[in-house]
Length: 408
Image (cartoon, rainbow, N blue to C red; front, side, top):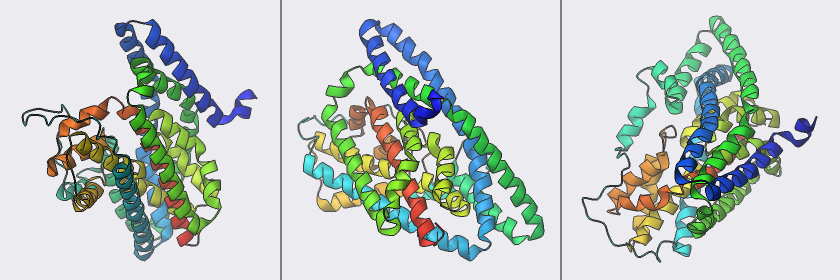
């Protein structure tokens, strides 16, 4: 009875506060070895939860997207909705990137560091992946759908599902058999999601306790100015996203946020927007977005519409440039913004994706990649805000596209 009264949101908040308290107690009363052991051990709970969520994502994306496209009925409808969706994604990505650029030019958070330029031979210890437009295009099309599902490569699963859904709609009566089977599969997977979500407060507790035990109050004062400024930027970005979305769906934008608050909190506490994906589908449908649009827009959003990550990329890139005393003209900053826009698409499944993209972009503008080491210690804390913002952005995008289609 008490569980139902508090609700999932309440339990996640309670778990987060409990995690902070537990982490601080361990930090001040245990040796470094015991802290490391505690953090490693308790992180297992978060890892199990995330693995259960990731286990669900591939079959859920495939089944819902194929059913959604099959219900759309023709390629023209897919193209129309896809065009509107991508237009919204590109526009909001530009808003997020520009907002990060404007904030860093006003705050100039890195200028007080006065770091000396490192030697050319110095290394960052980050994996140097070459990210280019060619790599991105190649990444869209899977060599094997089994391999794509095994690696949770959402963009590749989406590409296969679009082709499969169009073909399913084209074969007529026989296709309806597959559509009904996959529709039933989606409902079964969503039922599984309900079981997994019962572990969300435990995962949130473990994730917060692990990082606070290692970092302690350092999180609050060593990088306090950067963290506070970034979180303030995130809240302002939420305001802009809601304001723009309200031009299409009116006051229902706030109603939508109220509905998806559990998913946002879960993404925040686990620093993973993937953890909120299954629940987000259910909440958006209950809000009034049709299944065929939710199942089409949301998976695409997880590859193309990462508003929180966009803000962070310009925030971090300009912070590092300022820290080394490297002045960038307005034209150079715009060029960096466009590079980040192109190279960030479709790599949501890459570990530390934002850092990899930033590393590649910094080298293009002769900014030392070693500056990323300044942010590695607090990347988990920053990732929590990025993940929550990605969930908010994709929720609003789905509602807006539904409204554009007059289907909400």
